[in-house]
Length: 449
Image (cartoon, rainbow, N blue to C red):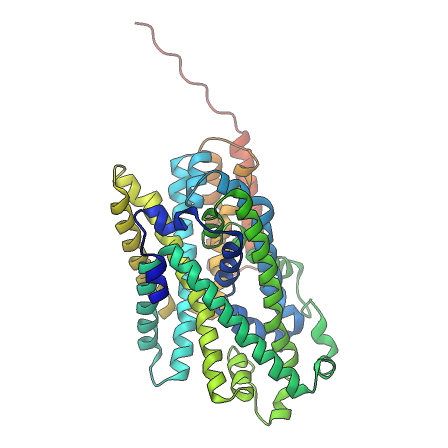
């Protein structure tokens, strides 16, 4: 909280609060991207899924998410930063009109709120497990903490705390990895303990649609995510934005392989240590508890909380950005910079409360995260088409978003059909193409006086 307050002390406008005054260097962009995207599920869910499913459980994280960040670096960062935008919705307004801006702002807000809920859910779960607090009380405390330092610091505080939290995450994982390999008797013994079937990237009996969705949802959701792109939009220049995103993808992939190693090498240590390691999302905490002395276990719990904190504040700021730039600015186009700053901070507060309510009724951690990615991905078609210079006017992009939301809602959330995400993308592309190519009616001739 003190770091965030110090970093955000000079904020005088919404741009200062939401894109850190466009002052970030490549190192800050890269480290912040890593810390933002390396969230609770990157440690907890990935290690448990690899422990139960082998490398097939690592496809979403780190591999697919790293590819999504790489796509930002190769195709999005330079061009979006060149436009001087604050949000993705700003770009869609410039390319496809105000109707598309408002609709996309709603999509971004829904996706980011769901992502925030996932992180608050994990935060409260860890606190409840480590203390006498129940889940509801822990959730209220977690929400209050996150809201306080996010409202003080804005993106500048977010990035600075991301760097601190990222260092803590890496240090704690390195110590746990060393102790795990030492308990095995070295890397060779650890590798030898892994069953042959655990090295496969395919799950037995998996359909091609399920396989494709596992890769496409995180890739598409990441590359058009306001939370991730806000880092590149805050870079000093377009080239810095691109280099920072490349660094972020590299750091994410390398560090993300460590939880994969926990899932591969950790299960065989149960009999060695004389403990029973959990087979669900508590696998990693139980492994850490078995290997760490109490003081190091406290540090590792701090690393888990750091992973959460470095993600949830970014998502809340994403909601704040679209609510302020695409919402409040419409009602008060002459608002002063200081009034826009107050609106942004107020939007952060509202977003945090809504996220806590979603977390209170949420399902599993991974389900919440994938839901957030699928929601964000409905913007992939109009953003890619817009950057490619395809289509003009409002109807193609607006129609594609509406159709994709409808298809996703009916096929996935309503009927639970496998491959719903693929049908959504196909419907979005077809709708955009049809409306972009459909001839516009000629304007009626003006009457003569």
